[in-house]
Amino acid sequence: LRLATALRAGTVDQSRVALMTENAAEYLEVMFGTWAAEGAIVPINYKLHAKEAARIFEDADTCLVIASERLAPAIRQECGDRKVVTIGSPEY
Image 1 (cartoon, rainbow, N blue to C red):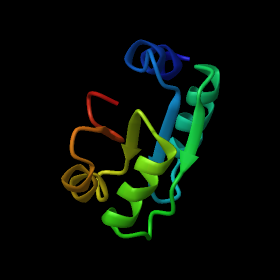
Image 2 (tube, rainbow, N blue to C red):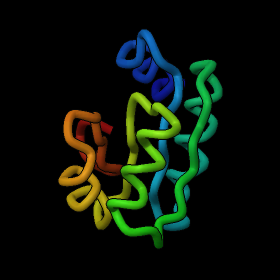
Image 3 (cartoon, helix red, strand yellow):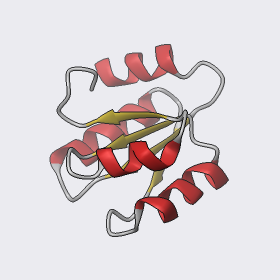
Image 4 (spheres, rainbow, N blue to C red):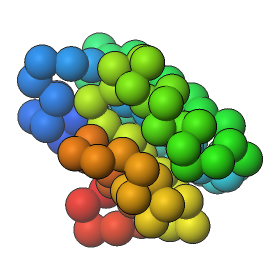
């Protein structure tokens, strides 16, 4: 529920959250947190190239991308001004 509260505070206008990570327990945390915040989750296959993922983020009009530590740097490069949160970081 803490994650849901943070998502609500940070995503006033939009409610789509992209999730790109390998299989991990945090996958479920983000899914249930997004749903508790009355948002929609946009799961992205972690094997996609960052450019392909960025296109999906744009098409889905996501307000936030939550990514694993391994994937976040490449996603940040491709996403421009879209906010990217790394799983396990203090921001997460």
